[in-house]
Image (cartoon, rainbow, N blue to C red; front, side, top):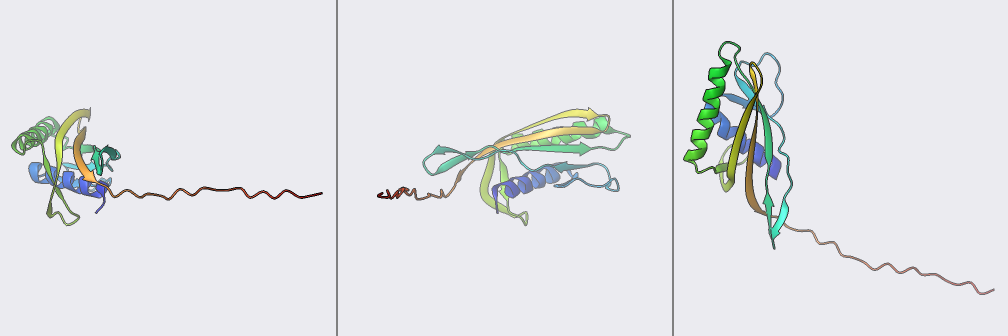
Length: 153
């Protein structure tokens, strides 16, 4: 499983389990029952932290669509449940595979921020960090010699 889908699936499962609100990784049509949220593809690339290990800090943007009758209450409950759950797991989200089965990895130091975009729409971001071991591909550098033949005339 690659980095992007692992983080996306893990955050999706964490938010759904914590809040009870259905989530998606693609934009949904208007027929979807409110409330629901969708997550965008994580942004971020691993960079070398030490020999053999890379630090990876994914940033995941999401949008929460609420029922028009009680949007403030739902938004407050959504945020509160996530903050309480993050405190309970010491701001570490367990990583899951594509079948939502927990793995040994964790997304650490997770931060959650939300802001109101419209009366019944909130945007939020989830930031985290993890260290990964990436196999580096070493390319052999070849010396190129220009063979120039001088013509004798």
